[in-house]
Image 1 (cartoon, rainbow, N blue to C red):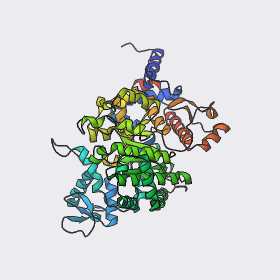
Image 2: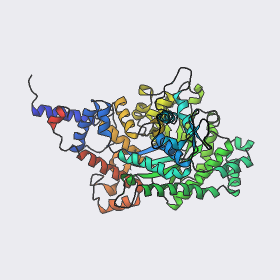
Image 3: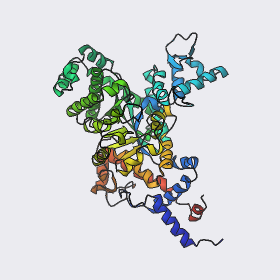
Image 4: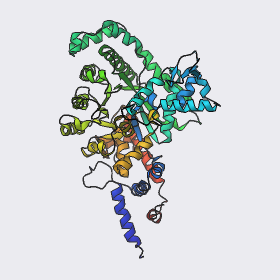
Length: 547
């Protein structure tokens, strides 16, 4: 066999690198020119991509992933942690219902502490069943029976009842897993205490004017809630996450020579509003959320940054009151315009709800709900004027939080049925996220591997996903980039040097000090540079032989 000349082989590698970086004609030129290190890394990525998921996961484990913006705090904790904590709390395990209950532990109620330490073979079987109950591990749907959708959402009730004192430990677990994957930023969705707000709302009740979503009625109801002491819970809700951050930093030994890598993971919180309850409770909790986030932002305490509405979107009340909820947000946004909003919308699929239920949720979230980001957005092509909606999302730079594993498990939507490539073709900003990595038994690296394999993504595509996540994080300050979602040119203060450099010019350094968002974006670029520098010693010959 005649050997290729080195020059010809090198030319072939260069062409492959262009393809690996996304050199297709239809792709927008929104990234900086590739460096030699990036070209080399792209080739190695392609080699691993064609070797299968395990090789690709090993390559992407340390790939800088930037942010995970769609994470439910309780759903991100693995079941094994909950079982250990239940033992510490003195709870029981219902061996039939496979859930936690309060003591006394008699009959079918087994002490949870019996499932930690040196457990018996019999308890090992219960331990395994409990993990399966708290997640979708080992789940196999049956025709006409319990679906993965049902299994997923029911898991949260089963591991409920644990003491809130573990919150800092849970945040530490999530931060540690993030650091191990070279993530740098998280926004954790969490529902703090709101019992007082709910009680006030119940006492006041709901009336016809409120049901008609009259802004003046909303304003009166807000004032009634505030006059009866709704703000009393703001301090407690702020303290809850401040204490969690303090505890997780203690566990991680932050600020000491023994600091854990998790200390480098920045965390902010999104206030979860439970939309599956009565309208007066939803409004009261949403108001408390806006008050809490506004207070945190005014105090610059780096905790609460935004709002999100949660619970299954296909639930009866969620569907019935969807437009009403968006009108509530429309009003509350007018009062608290500084509070960021990200909304679950379009976490639906054909057959899950009637066709008319698929036609408007994403558009209303964007137009009425003032969502800056949309979580899931799976049913976008079922919306009225879907193409027009895509143009609107792209034009307004409303980012879609893509949750591939969650969407397959809950909705049965994956591959070419998922709108991920449609969003990308329409230039709607997208970023990968995990949703509930503990319940789904995944991590963010898993989602990157899945996206790369399922949609034949290039190395530069993956960098764009990571950059987009940081671009749409709810961190304060201006973006590093001169134009939204265009990563080719930094702001004028930081031009003249590749972003991520160790010694930015004085004007750039001052700008980065003034903007937490820009500083985080600069750090992401630094991590890209460091990651790609690892492959400098790889030779063209080893690439040709797949090494």
